[in-house]
Amino acid sequence: MKILVIGAGNMGLTYASAIAKSGQRNKEELMMFDKSDELRETLRKGDHNFEVYDTLEESMPLADIVFIAVKPYHIEELMGCMKPLMNDQQLVISIMAGVTIETLQQGLGIKKIVRAMPNLPAQVGKGMTSYLAAPEISRIELWMVEELLNCTGKSVRVDSQMFIDASTGISGSGPAYVFYFMESMMQAAKSMGFSDNDGKVLVSATFEGAIELFKKNKLTPDGWMKRVASKGGTTQAALDSLQDNNVKQLIHDAAYAAFNRAIELGKYEEKEEKIETVHEIKKV
Image (cartoon, rainbow, N blue to C red; front, side, top):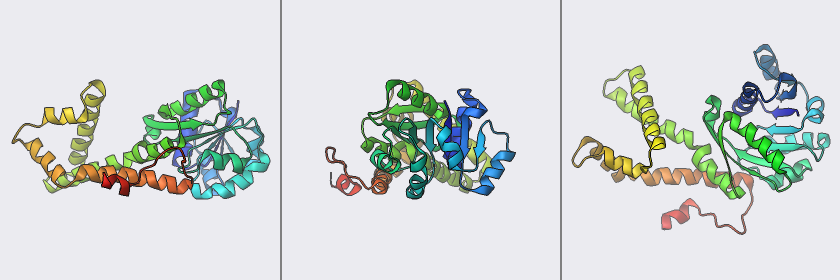
């Protein structure tokens, strides 16, 4: 079985490299295509365990599974190039934000579509991917898809495209929220007199330790906050400041902003499921 990855950006290259490292496919079974001549030449000079192809005409007919890892605004042009080269037994895994299964089925002329939403930690094998498969995909094919997605970390199968968009707001865009918080803490450390390196060590170790505590125990985040903070203490002073500045609601709204943007990119309406907007949430 051969796999073609279209798009050699951050996520496309991440998946190609992860699949190669997993040993699931040898070099001849893993193909990469990108429309950039310069990028393809760079890839050929690197030590990669996949074949680089110059055209879709060469690579598409050979593929059993196709990963689409391009920016959503490229999809119309790409589908126009792909459709004449596809057959109804091929399976497509799309990691494009907002592009629905129906859009891909119509644009590519095939039924076997998986829509997935990974995140950036996939680059270090700690990714979180949510995915939804079209009904036409068999159990065996679904198992193969899960194996491929899990090469970059963990995956969870969701029940509808609404949850793919929702996961965009939580795990897909989520690492940026963490980096935003880390940057703020590092800036605070610098203003207190710490060097950039010491600030990075202090903040990264704090995040790593907190995550391990959370993963290995049953306490909720609120439970951990109560355990760390004592009345009138330093931690409580920090938490009071966050509460006074409404930081929790701001983070909540930021996640919904990403969620709603994913819906806008897809341009579809869920008729059977209510999707709340940030404006509606604020009314609650």
